[in-house]
Length: 634
Image (cartoon, rainbow, N blue to C red; front, side, top):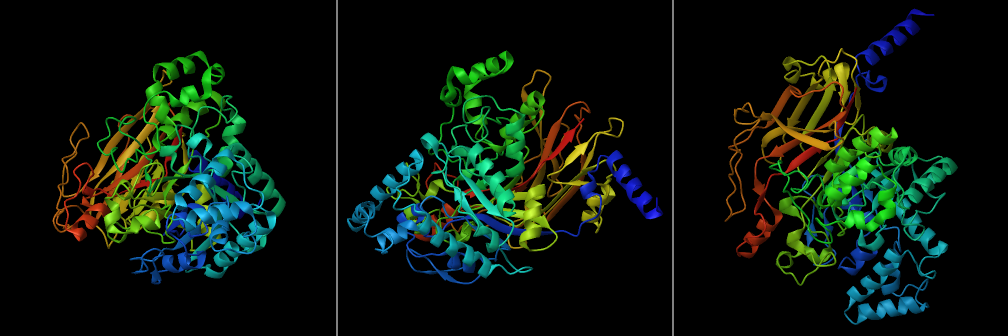
């Protein structure tokens, strides 16, 4: 054996002994890239029918790159404040690009009776009737064969592919090829964004999987298995809007009603390494009813088209579902039905649920990283509070923000119900499809609600406070530990790990209030537990023995929608150890960074109109970032 080989093996054994995964043993020169994996143009049926009649994938990429574009409804010039690094134009796969053909009399569809009927609704000024008919077909999984032919789907898919390849500029801007699988059984949102690693050469070898093919996530994963093997491509599938999934996004049972098993968990985690946890239709980190001790849980809660409370999740599966579980599981569900009904709707409770499932079946189906994205249907990646163009094109006019008659998302939500969010942040070696995709796969990602905070999060056993203030913080993080999205094993005689954390403000946005660590575990009775630790605070505020810290204050002027950076800090860093660490208990840890208060997008509209802001909606918010977790295992 050569000295070089011996040294390599010795180094690997040493890193494994330290609890550091070998894949992260070498220092990586990563930088953070910000993007949007969830954007729609007029090629998506709902976008077209809600006022977006002329944006295209090309115009979406142009906006993301920082070029001025024209708004599809009111035709004003619009421009993003800071260009993105990457973008997925994720049109709904169901009837992708078909609705513009229908309403514009495209000869490929004009002769069909359904096209003539839908066009008649639009001509009569009733596009909502067309929307309702199309949505009913999607929810039922029954496509009209004339609008869903292979020839039509292929021609539209080619346009989407060509636009992505045309705008992809390695090292400068990454354009991924992807789509949205829009499964909505009984109105429960089970949607996924799917995008691939490679270019159009492989994308032309398949047509996107749709909910007309199946509304079951398991069938989507099977299709990804088959397609990746057939065409030599890799994919990421990203659930979103779990907050309106009626408890079904992170369930206790498979789609057929039987309990989750190891095969399900492993299949899900092969493809769904990431979850979109914040976007325009609300924040899905947690909910006050699930995290009553969390003072920051009540953030951009989206209460529309969602069942909060009740026994929806239990009754939806019936006694046959409960019969698949152990007596203890069954008793817990029945006795805590109100909480269980929403536990499948939020990321934090899903992470907790994953730990419990892993104890039972030996694999964790909910071991995911976190990102944000917009879900904008205006063709513009719009997430900035002071430059927000709404969910739908109809939602872009300030008056419509406050007008309940301007429904933008069925059944009854409108502009002020929406949040201006979010962004996906990725630590990758370079701005290319391959590097960014690989970061998604290893979960070295985090979510922000909009501001471009730079957040680092590492776990290891040798960090000290000097590391937090080193100019080599990232290098030290990779040398001594593992980054966000990783596993950390206990191999240091039950010693508590330490966490190296750094957060730097967006230079164009507000200062930081605090850094928190959220811990989750399952107790000896099998019940999920969580704890929130304030680990760093701005303005020299002290964290008391109970872990509490005084509020940061609020400088927002409600009359002018302005704020001052006279409070908060530009950067917060620390090394933290869990004071309640139990070496025998599996747990996850993730970081939440909170900004000082700033104006909400609806306040900007109210000030612009010279009206009072409605009292039952917040005028200010505290923007935030959520890192992917690090999982500790005994």
